[in-house]
Length: 285
Image 1 (spheres, rainbow, N blue to C red):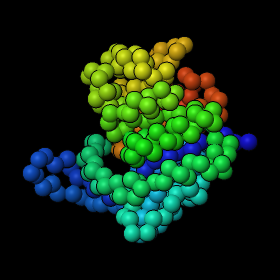
Image 2 (spheres, rainbow, N blue to C red):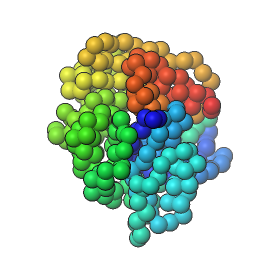
Image 3 (tube, one colour):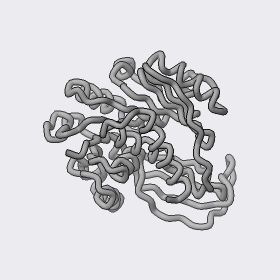
């Protein structure tokens, strides 16, 4: 049986705008083009799980609108089981506007919409958990949903991976339910680990966070990542690639990591495979 990863999280219809540079405060920048893109950290990670060869199941919600149709079509096209994505009448689907500059860097604003209305009662459905070996969470849905999902996973002996993005204070009750924490440099700093500017400081941040979480990965963009588990700690330099776009690289990493962990891959090998998946994504592969 192919291992299953359950992703409980957000779905956003992304409107991507390309411009020469990111606008400063009060500046109107001139863009070159725009296009729609399937997104939301939950949706992106669910698609990345399927792309990495694991069975991917999504728990989420969209509105009864064109954006919602676009998002469910995107899940299905990506090989994701969308039976547990609710369609909510009278609620707008989640969306975002992201601006990408000529170097591939970006900034985005999200409007959560239906993502704030995911029903935690769905977690009681036994079929939802069939063959699930790993639950993946992010911070684009309400804290109450993450806590309910993590508790349901713990009750079933399912490991929990939290990508704590965007950064926010975590409920005290959630912290002991997390088996693997994945954060980037900004999120690590916002969680009290100090600035992350290179692999040395990334390793220090991972050690700091390991006081609260048993396994921690701190990604540092083009510099690479640092990881700490109860048994080992290591850094891994990023592969040198030509950047097409960094948008979604973290989600590609998390999805691939989840797939590898769900199939029982050695942790260090799983992290290496996830790093390669992120590099391919950044390079447009």
